[in-house]
Amino acid sequence: MITLTLLHPLQPIPAQSWTFADDESVIRIGRAIDNDVVLYSAVVSRRHVEVRRIQEIWHVVSFGANGTYVDGKAIEKIPITDGVIFRLARSGPQIQINLGETTYHEMTSTTTLLDDYPMATQFQ
Image (cartoon, rainbow, N blue to C red; front, side, top):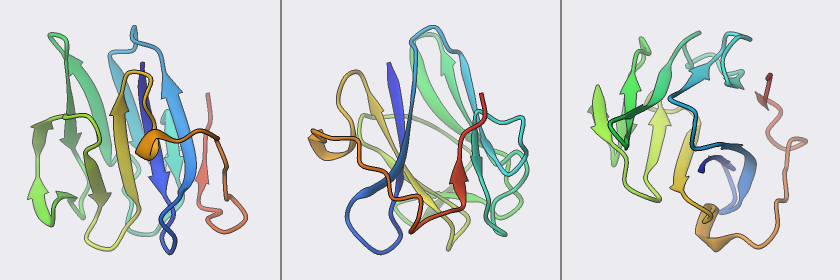
């Protein structure tokens, strides 16, 4: 299981989470409605990032015109470690990735704050 959590821009809590089964090999993130995770933000490309499973290891692969950042550094492709946080564009949304059963900081509830962060939605 892999969980992607959109982090709230102003508070240290999750805004939205998406969980995918282990049999997924590619999770697409971007503005286009055919992505697995759709984020409505001017700095997010239609197909901004893919989270890919390559030989049992998950990777973040950037396609966005505005870049993808981990720890403030632009990335093209990196292997994922549990809990990694990446940002879409320099000032865009942040997403945390958790592998396995754990979600954002050992969350015990799945509170969503879509009223505060309406750019996030999911189409599947």
